Amino acid sequence: QVQLVESGGGLVQAGGSLRVSCVTSGGTFSNYPMGWFRQAPGKERELVCALSRGGSATYIAVAVQGRFTISRDNTKNTLYLEMNSLKPEDTAVYYCAARAVGFGYYTRPNEYNYWGQGTQVTVSS
Image 1 (cartoon, rainbow, N blue to C red):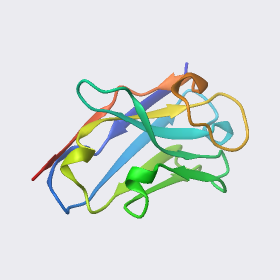
Image 2 (spheres, one colour):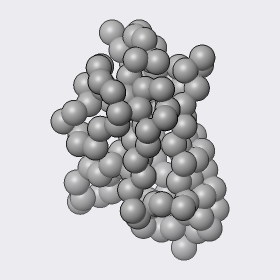
Image 3 (cartoon, rainbow, N blue to C red):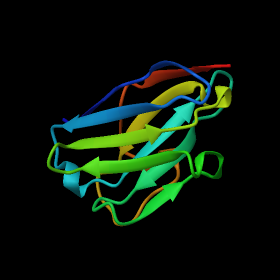
Image 4 (cartoon, rainbow, N blue to C red):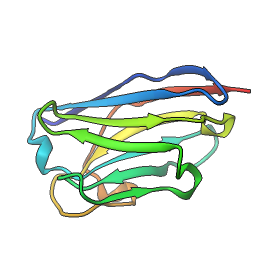
């Protein structure tokens, strides 16, 4: 059974930085295209960043371009999201997601097979 566990969320002031991590177990992490999604209260879950299984192809949502970076360490079965210049509108629960098979990156929630429980990121103004 594949499990994803996020960590690293928290409260930060606007302009600050956070790095959230997602450790995967129970499967072959290096085979999985991965993604970071977020969901704010009253809003739909949206893609933040996505990454191919080898890390060569990435997608960064327009709202976070130039501020967020996605990366992975296949030796540690870990996905990262580095968030800089945080804004109050970045406040949300952040979820990592894994797709069981595929090449490239994937942008829709229903394209992913496994999800973490989420980690709260709160940016104060």
